[in-house]
Length: 242
Length: 242
Image 1 (cartoon, rainbow over the protein chains, first blue to last red):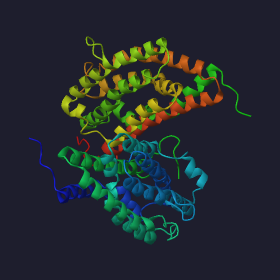
Image 2 (cartoon, one colour; image 1 turned 90 degrees about the vertical axis):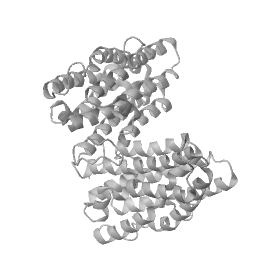
Image 3 (tube, rainbow over the protein chains, first blue to last red; image 1 turned 135 degrees about the vertical axis):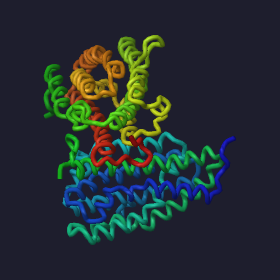
Image 4 (cartoon, each protein chain N blue to C red; image 1 turned 30 degrees about the vertical axis):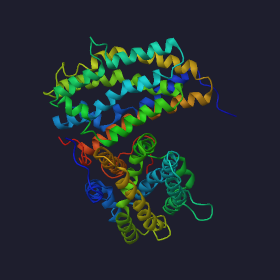
């Protein structure tokens, strides 16, 4: 009586439907950010909090790398680590994010100390790292699939922010440019993996659940920013005050 | 050149100062809740989300119990488990919380399924369980010390809610009565433990940090409720809608 297996195309369609309903491009905070409606202090708060997410991605990928069973899989995930941590000559994503926070007038020491971080950011990001450590490899790979939706949001973000804010320029937004080519490469691999390796409907449901979880944690980060810095604008005790 | 050791009285005073600055009785959502300013749907959202916290407390205590090194410590922590899980004759805290959600008109099946939970609640509560598993026993014990501040908030909550809402009565709020005697007993033990066992200033700072962390996660839960159900009142996709 269990539901029938989805075809790869059906599974992909259901994954895309989750993005259409839950991806954080739909969050009011992103509309404000991209539409030029935020003050510099509010953009600083976003970049400061998002730094912790960026800085945790390679930790997340390293945790997954450590659990992967084959050379081919580990090589793919090692490439992701290199994208985020750099190779010592070209900077990785974490360093490029600091170019952004620096461009917005925040000191590296302050940003990397995490002193001003919203606790909710920490809880959501740490939930991602724990998920990747504790769930199946299939679910861990599936949770990376929000990148299916990221090229659209990145183009929108970069063009919107360049147009709207005089305190942002192409150099400060340089984080995003390599992501436009890296993300589709990541997705091609991960989508192929989950459509191939989810061999029962239960596994396919676990894949869908992992993507929902990931959308939820991106959304929760924007909820926390919106509450603390937009409406009602009450940063919790100890958090960054613009 | 490290800072001098605090006396037990100084350490306790610093712990109380953290509560005075960061305990969630100061959060606007609690003022609304206790002051009778919330609709029944908003009170339902609070009780539904808080259920996950209550239900995770014995899991948290069991994780700590498993790490405790002596009979005396394990016996104390076993008592806490019994307070929350009951003994098969008198109900524990988790069952008593379901009396509250039921009294508010929510079905047990819906509440315990966690289907309507705010993701931010899950992330904050899970962060607590992970903290207790991963940090030192000293920090894990210290993180329970928010109970130093709970008898005051409980009296305020019970009297405020009974006065303000015709949809709650003494029976639905019966969760709280035993906590008025259990919490001081818990605190006496935990405060004695941390003042005795934190033997360096670094350990004392870790104790203070653990209490700050715990206050932050209680606060983050109310931030999420406030954002989703008060202002601007935007529940994230999939969450309970009153």
